[in-house]
Length: 129
Image (cartoon, rainbow, N blue to C red; front, side, top):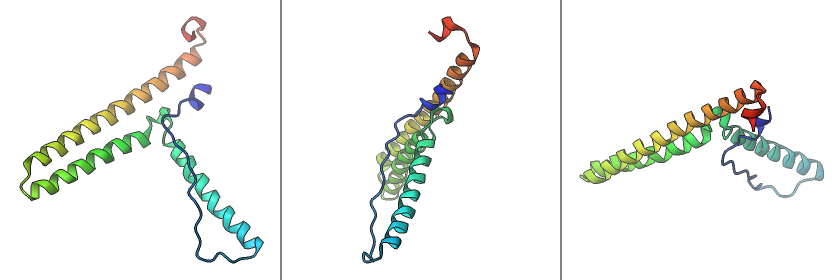
């Protein structure tokens, strides 16, 4: 189980600030307001952390790669509408590059996690070293 807990990839955690338009409230309301906000923020960070777990293939990293590729492709389509074929080629190239990287990285992380898991249950001391 320790191999599972130690396999988080590139997860930055931060809590968003709290903003309110009604700053004047009693202590009980303020406490409830703060508690609700930071509970939501902690859950959001938990899901972000869960999305970076390597045993799942780091789905957050896959989404980042696909998002970057799709944005470039969308910009390329916009350029193509204005007659710029090169921007379309560049956008398509970026989409394929980032998509392939994201998928291969995900497969690599999943297989690596399973490999570590099988190694830990094999109880082979020589292999574990």
